[in-house]
Image 1 (cartoon, rainbow, N blue to C red):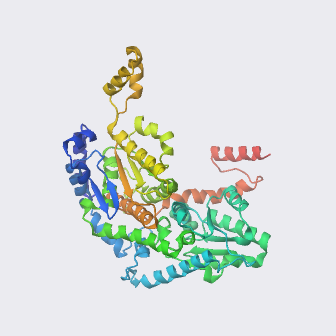
Image 2 (cartoon, rainbow, N blue to C red):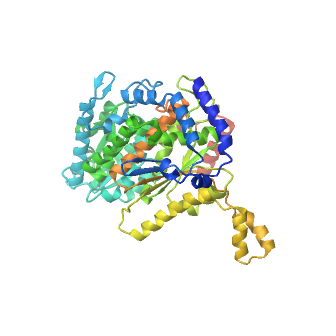
Image 3 (cartoon, rainbow, N blue to C red):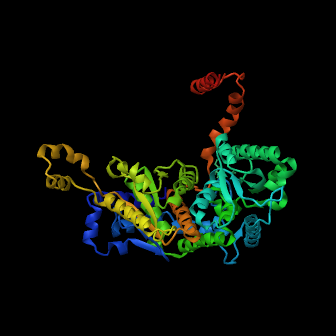
Length: 546
Ligand code: F6P
């Protein structure tokens, strides 16, 4: 760790002792300008971070930490196309995919702007032709359903976004997502479809991912069985960086859309991996989605750290993770159609920053990625919010809310928004023992009952949260939300000095699975050499299979 980072962290540790005695509600009492001071805007998007255990000194110390970690220098390197993904020796320039300013983007000495534009035009044209029915299935019928087969970054982004933006589908086909190698996923989807009006998109950066390849082969068999071998080219399209492997699968060249190794899987929604989303919302709306992300890129690049939203989000995360020791972070969208947003963020954050060595391979001396989780409000309130309010762990929360409903029901939305505001207020305010006793006393409860019940009704409060308020869940707003979190994750990786763009941690399980698969599949194979538990489990499965 750089010595000045160590010093900045030590300063924050000392400062925490001071802040540990402060209550957030009192900070509001002391400073009537607190909301204005501790909120930042990007046009009509508001980031409220006033309900945190911070004051101006905290922020100053956190900004010192960011500067000590050279966040600005690392940000410049990211946007320059340098090989920031050092273990795979490549750039991580997903921002280039959403920059439609026409400026040159140089990666590995080449201006990639033209190529990006050509690929984007090709997949957006294809999306529009699928939507308007000019591209049809083998029997001449337009496509009523599109199935994206992919996993991880080739599924979570488009699946999350297609659901979030479903009101913008218009007369386009229904879009489905199959990811799990569990045959139930494909089977349940196929049950609802007519093969003659179904298009499959095989989405895989590497075109080797076991789950995707298995599902793709099964989908191919389904089309062959239902419509004949000759129908295959009419019912498949693909998105990949490995065009040679796609060709072997038998997909027509003009239906294969490429992207580049400098686009990480979990950052690939902006590339042709977004094809299924483009089919869902159409080309113009997809372009708006890209514009939203580009707004954030500009904000991230050009805004001073003090009011730079992703930087602030990242610093608050570091404050709680590294200084307070909190191990998890909840993201609760009060937006039903963001139902997959937390799952999407899990890959973005935990696959990027779930590391325990620095970029140079040295053991990290500080904690990295917290567990990211969440479910939409208000549903979560009737499930895990008990723990958020009264559990022994403090879990910082991000609340997400649109100011305007997508559905034209103002009453529902007012209630939704009131719930969102009430929860962050309750987490902060809490309810003291004295307040509880007073309430119970006023309700004429006998003293001994009050004594027994009061501890259960106390809320410690002082639990931190941010609120991100945007005008409406439209393509531009969603593009902004995603990019805010992308850059938050990047800033944290800069502070922790880790490579956010590799994912070696997924390899071992994949490798062991390919060794175990033939043994699991063939019950006559011996279990010698396996550890006792693995052998025992395989044997038990064999016995249960009968
Ligand atoms: O196993 C993890 C992973 O490599 C992710 O990083 C990636 O998004 C996912 O698998 C899917 O990979 P692909 O797009 O190559 O099929």
